[in-house]
Image 1 (spheres, rainbow, N blue to C red):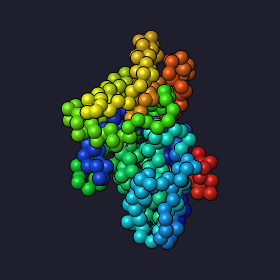
Image 2 (cartoon, protein in one colour; image 1 turned 180 degrees about the vertical axis):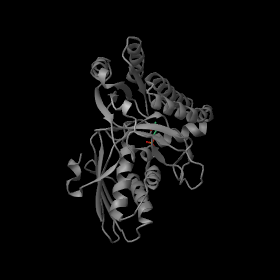
Image 3 (spheres, rainbow, N blue to C red; image 1 turned 90 degrees about the vertical axis):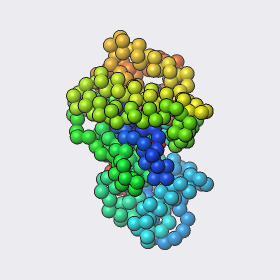
Image 4 (spheres, rainbow, N blue to C red; image 1 turned 90 degrees about the horizontal axis):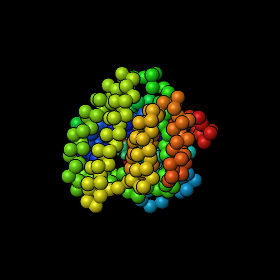
Length: 334
Ligand code: PMV
């Protein structure tokens, strides 16, 4: 009853922000993302086969209190289908910063969903695995798959149709790169669930934001299929700014931007005018993710290093789906 899995984080080109059901973690609208490596979460799960205390060791630190209770409730969703699995021990490591707005929950819950179902001997379809990962974190539903991934909002109260699906292979985008400009170290100010809840409850722009999402998903998919970088850039930047505008209009405002965040945004726009084809997106944290083609990656990385407030950059490439690996060598697994 041991299994291990590797999953990559994903960055949304069309954002998810808001839930239609908090308990089941159902999104208010769809979204569209790209799964990115080589950064990854690696997770080993072992069920004891008898009752006992669950243990969760994340990045070498034992989780306690509310964090551990949340993870136990997630594992209960697997134990419902494997009543004899018993207590669980989970060890997990991220090779990139955790809970900093760098999408660590996306790879974290995708890897955990895969390793836990495998360890418990629970057979799941890809869609069911995506549904399970969604219960941990909305964005994790997308990290089950590689490449460009579409998340469906679904309409069923059960949430069984709120899963992600990979787009067809789009080889003309294999040279797309995402460079993460890290602007602060440490955890983000407002966890995404809290930011979403406050936006839904208090922002006059939440409902109009939700209306923007499906048309943006359709336009982004058309741009991807047409190999149209310019349209993808327009859709992705608009989605990020519309998401943040709705969050900032909450009371009190949910503000993820710091000074350097805005400085990078202006720099990317200036560079674009000068022939560097790049576009940005921003999640529930202060960092800026900048997309560019491989041919201009080095130029972009050098330019980002020159923006005051950019502490460092993390370079990523399109990556594949979550997968099981040898539990005996899980920490080294590629
Ligand atoms: O599912 P969560 O809690 O990781 O929230 C994701 C929210 C954003 O990163 C801001 C947008 C997205 O679609 O990933």
